Image (spheres, rainbow over the protein chains, first blue to last red):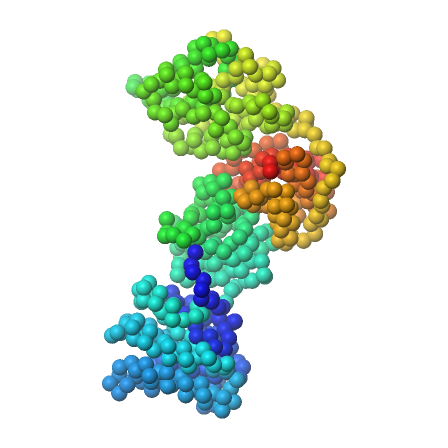
Length: 298
Length: 319
């Protein structure tokens, strides 16, 4: 089981003072976190500071949106700051102090500009892959944290493309952030939570799965299957109960996977796996156990 | 091997399921040793010997060259009829394409209730159904010097062929599995407890039911995996009753001696109920009957009453 000294936060539950880390495994995951983060601000009286060299209309949450971006920028509710302006020195090298200053300045002005909160984000992957690597990023995290965490109106998300950084690098970054950002659950009725996961791709199931919730799982599983070919992972580390009909349902959907694809159950708890062992994995064609609780993939 | 033998091997072999009624060790070995040897000499067969300890030792002495894993102590193999049938089938599949050639002596324990004895007799009868088409050959020893007459009568009813006194004959008392199982069901009794707890089920959301069963399992001394298995079993039966049955649907729970009972009832008539329902292992979870079969695996005993007065599924676990 993962250590849980940090908080995991679905993006819709982000709160002032959160200095969150988003390790995204693909663009869809990034868009599903950063998009709602940005849109929720612009739809209310909150300011967005996005440090990037991309044009505003191509940013997560702003692409094909109904917001009047020009108006939002002129009112300073949307601040899209190029890196050169926000955090680089004259030679084009990253300057941690400058980034911290930018964040402080934008935060301080937000109040005077009439915004009730400010949300800041930057994709830091380029720093990890550049000279200095994670050391560079870590060297400024303290100052970034000071710009966000003590504040009652600032929230920040550091984006990292986990495909482009090593496990150790990401581990070090994780320790310097108290909040891990997650996509919002696709379904949550208090008993069962279904959430899209990306590394590996699939769904995370939490709580209890029974007949009254089969149709919801089916709907989200089919959506996941439609969006990608190949294997689908189900992270069931926090699944406390699966009913026998649920096994039948999974086996049914596994038959609908493209040729050779499997439904992989990761982190099955022994008490939940017991019913599968009892009937035999061989009776669940194209379903197989994946990563073990607290261990590596089998 | 002659080409004739090779051609013959392609022919599907019929299932052989014979009761071997013997009297004492000498009589046992006179038939058991040649049976085992016959299997060992046939390349297309895989021999398994599951007999009681004393007979196991005697047979080992006759086949010193054979690997230990060919010999299994019957005491450990015959623990739970539905699970044993599943394990036996796994064994048959694992040995394929070779055909299992089994000397298989069911255990009949002294302390058993009539019901437990009958459930094991049902197991013997189910072999005829479950191993159809596997080409397996099973010789099932029954010790006539120690077993009571009613068990020997079951042997005659559950095996199409009998081996006794060096001869072999059709069993005139043999009953097809469905008929035998129906007979086993007919003599069941369903005493109602003086005291029980009842939970009406009105919603398809079974979260409350699972908590209700889990709390009571805990209170009555059932813990860990056994409690979880009961919760899973009751949840499945309840989900089925809500889906296919007729309200009112409810769960009754009580204890008697070392056992905990949980019975799910509804007012519907299960018109297609078969006495073999949930006994024959389904090939996959996609086959109908998977649910009830799994429920039967999870608890000690499942008894289904499908009558005009409703459908009742009683589950029993030992505390």
